[in-house]
Amino acid sequence: MTQTVWIIDDDKAIRWVLEKSLSRSNIAYQSFASADDALNALYDTLPSVIISDVRMPGTDGLKFLGKVKAEHPALPVIIMTAHSDLDSAVSAFQGGAFEYLPKPFDVDQAVALIERALAESRSGDAVGESPEAMPALLGQAPAMQDVFRAIGRLSQSSVTVLITGESGTGKERVAEALHRHSVRASKPFIALNTAAIPKDLLESELFGHEKGAFTGAVGSRRGRFEEAEGGTLFLDEIGDMPTELQTRLLRVLSDGHFYRVGGHTPIKANVRVIAATHQHLEERVKQGQFREDLFHRLNVIRLRLPPLRERSEDIPLLVRHFLSRSAANLGVEPKRLSDSAMAFVRQYAFPGNVRQLENLCQWITVMAPGQTVESADLPPEFRLPPDAAPASHSHEADASAQPASVPLHATPALADGDWLQLLAREVSQRLAAGETGIIDDLTARFESTCIKSGLAHTGGRKVEAAQLLGWGRNTLTRKIQELGLEHE
Image (cartoon, rainbow, N blue to C red; front, side, top):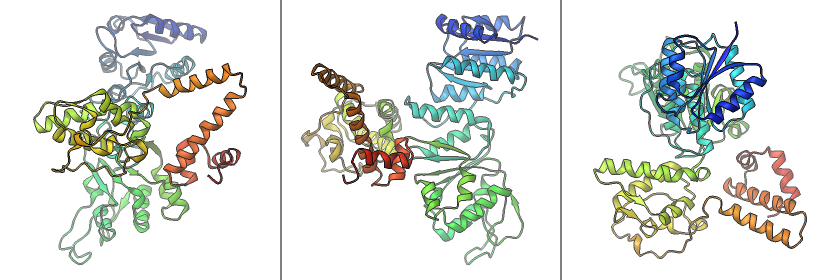
């Protein structure tokens, strides 16, 4: 039986590219300019695989997906879109999509994906129910798009996930999203910060206790594992868990049973564990502070949340969202930042990440005068030069503070692309002067700057700096030697 791929996109160029690529691979195809045309054709014939755009006139790709999967749950549907966001990614996977393909895509990879879908065209899964509204996770930065894509891809799995990232990057929000868009969504989501519970109480918090298990245990008590039965248990700051409790947690993950403190009857745990940490667990394993076998049990799927300084292009989007939410909570009109004020906010390092930005927006809603917030209305630390910005990110209301009276000493950060323009100008000037070897010199200066900034950020820890820069430790060490940075 001939296998046929349906291509659905209102963009003729996209259809043409896919048609030519499928022809070269000897794959039969049929193209449609709208989802409605494809739905009409489904009454007469059934393809082996469908690849469909999301945003089209008439029925959009996600509604089309729902209609197709309702009638043909085993039919693989690949969703492609140039408008990557969490809602469409999760909706695509929750709606039963075979894969989510953001544009622009590599044509060879797209064909390989179609071939894989053809090979599995009879193994489609049944449709799940529509996802509930989730906590806000916003961002167009590539690193956040990777996170959104992973959440969608994991929506039909109960695999253990380890979320890493600095404090304030939104690790619990991502854990909530993983739960809300999973098959366990109707069951409890229980969160526990292991660093916030005293060591001698943490075991009871996790596993519960029987009456008389210790002084003060006047009755039996269920722990977080029992409270999360059938759902998800989120263990934040897992790197701070005491070693003896690491052993007990490993046992639960290994055999699926645990005992209450003072108990003798095993209790079966049907719980998905999502762990999070701001620490580098590999280093803690090397230092003997974290069990290696537990690390490997937790590190099945790892999601790294980027710090806000790595996704500054998302700051305007997040600011609008947080200002709108703060205004709604207070019953007032949302404020907006002027271009100059936004430039100052974007140049700030945000050691507290998204949580700090949210706090700033709450401060602005309450304290800043007028509906349009100028740079002089920002808290003082946001009006300092980047190198002078303090690490503290508390914006407590101070009746004596008058931000508008503080003089401006900073200049806004370079806009996106400005540094590339400066680079192009320097290259042009050096070429005009007859210089050679320009790339080697500029590459060395670029790498030196990255290394110095990376080591400054990690306090001189080479392993951590290498990881953040995308190198191995040996590569970083070699670069330091080659660039003569050993004594700087």
